[in-house]
Each structure stands twice: as C-alpha cells, then as structure tokens.
Length: 94
Image 1 (cartoon, rainbow, N blue to C red):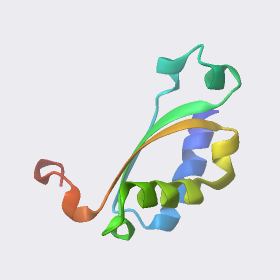
Image 2 (spheres, rainbow, N blue to C red):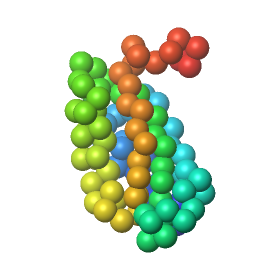
Image 3 (cartoon, rainbow, N blue to C red):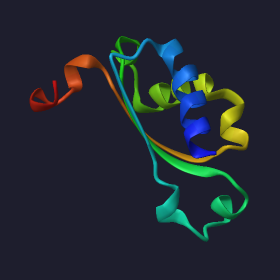
C-alpha cells in the first residue's frame, strides 16, 4: 500500500512543479501508533519549488496539504514536510 500511496502523493505534489522531491515511507518507525494501526502511513517529504519563494513555513505547508488533498484523510496519517525555495537548498545538496 505504501508504494501506491507514495506514487499518488508524488502525482499530486507534481502540481507544485517541484525542482526536487524526495518522499520516504517512515511508517515502520511508528508501528503501534494509533494512526498506523488504523492503516494510515507516516511519510517524510523534502520538496524544493519556486512556489515556496517568499512564503512562510505555514503557507508552504498549506500548499503541500492542499496538493495532497484527501490523501491526508486516510492513506497518509502523518507527513513531515521540509519545503524549500531553490535558494534555500544547502549548496552541497544542489
């Protein structure tokens, strides 16, 4: 199920035109957690996109949650987000 969820999330996040997108399933680290027991996964996202330039962290997260849509109400229980504008990417990671 997680690979399907990752593919669906990546498809939806593509609407933000990311220059870089890294999505990891972190569910195994949360085994036994209430959301995990109910079938929702835990994911870690790093996304770099022009759309984040000049926006607050809260605004960036809202953009991500809006793009993810109803996946956040079932297949995704938790999403750790690192949303960056291109100039915020550490030099060695470019």
